[in-house]
Image 1 (tube, rainbow over the protein chains, first blue to last red):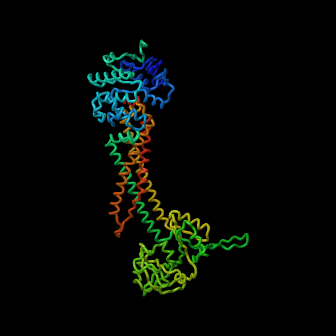
Image 2: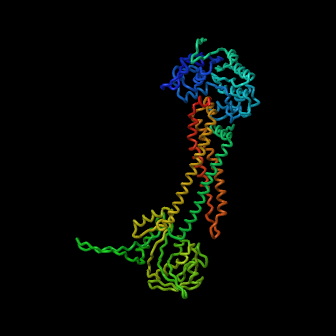
Image 3: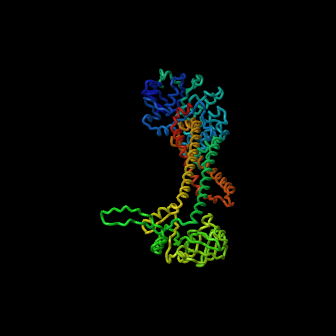
Length: 230
Length: 408
């Protein structure tokens, strides 16, 4: 079976070619298999956000290869990366960024809508199913801004799952929530991972949550020291 | 979420609705701009139509007259140089050479609507102890009235011209103390003298014209002016009044006549019309420009406010072109809806102004011209302006780096 994500010697530098060129990532190798539930940890400034952006195809590495489902992304153009990102990667952000002009249901429909162009009944049905799964069916017509932080983050999880992605990237998904909501959101992701086999990569500072993941990868100064290739 | 709209339209409408106050403020701005343009355009079109109607229904648009008589120095043998002062000859009243042929030729032209040969010269109107200098114009009524609508200006009697009748202006009638059916003795320098009956009195709207102009039958004028069988000018009206000068030049180049267009004979009036058009266009352009800047400013702010939304949309696979279209459509929607309000505003102001702005005599200052074309063109232009104004903000939105946008 092809690995969902393979990083080979990923390097990232900023201000390339100038006297202040700085390398943030110094050759990172990482492999994720389908169904992995992985915690990415590391102190602030260690480069984990940069790594997450590269994995999420929002940024390109300066050097090294990134394979998603065996497809080498370094040879893809901007438009193809956008397409691949839309189809294979779901995002959950720390500040549960829902689009405020839309309802919960519409936010969940959004990835399908931008992919297909026109809304249809199937999209609405799938959004309702996902909202039901995250326990927010009664709130489907609420405007995004009229929901609590925990609710918004659950909507964001539903939205991340809309396109049935192979990989969900969560950037401190519980970092902005009280501990009870944080637990609920984490449990929800874990359950979805078990039910559907969706691969999760979760950036977190919370060591308790990290311990409940299958694997912990630590980024220290742009390196992943002694990473055991499982 | 409407099933009948694609993603870009749904997002555009929602973004505009969410920032409702911002949207309403810029809509008001656009509406005022479009309103000013509609109001100015319609009013100036009306004023111009009125002026042009007045000017061009009381005079021909092109007048063909015999060419100037030029004195040439006598030429002697080769080698002799003559230091002669060449004096300009006096311009006798002459008939146009072979005028029936020229008339037929003019009637055959598709760009000419009406052709009327006239005989014109000066004379003296006498009644009792009073005499007044007049311009005697001999006309063929059915042809001439198509060019100068004398029947529209008749205030007493009627416009029928008989061989013993004369139409005079209100001022002349006053000066001579003449009213309908009174007799006037008309004499000319050529020695002609006739007693004519006043059959109609007209008011051309200008004191000078009402004092001097008189109309008689063509044959009457010919015999009074000693030009039996001749005409002194051929008057023309054309399809396109602004092409009059070009047509006149063309005629002058091909026929042995001098052709004067209304543009040349009313140079000042024409310049005024043109200046008005130019300043109107200039004002409209600047109003349009300020509307465009307003739309652009609001959209630039909107792009900044929505950079996180844009980043998230990009992260979930929205293409740059889709983001671009979302903002272009917003510009178009603002322009279009603003133009609807603006048209209503402009039309309302026009109706009110039309009601209150009156001429000295109480008649309307300008005719109320509310042509659907004006509103269609204004709406289309405003929509296009909106889309064009949105280009810069939309490009900015489409180029946003999602990483930067999400980090905020």
